[in-house]
Image 1 (cartoon, rainbow, N blue to C red):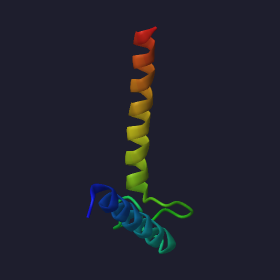
Image 2: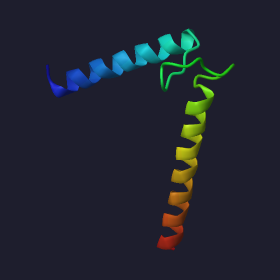
Image 3: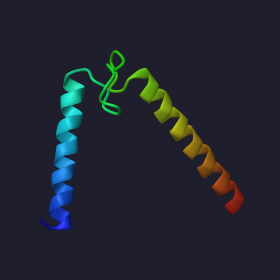
Image 4: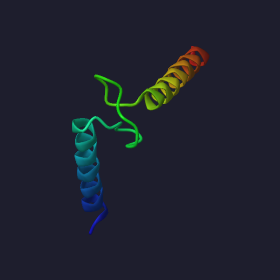
Length: 68
């Protein structure tokens, strides 16, 4: 199996698992806790994602300010 085929297989498996978790109301990030109502992640995973995204946003802003 080539690298490209293996990657395609892994992507397909991930996609399948994501939609299965989503259909069954399980957090798509950790796969263990129930997802928050109307969401795809549990509260804990959602908070972690928010923290990471905010940190990346501020890092990007500081890097752009330093370039100016």
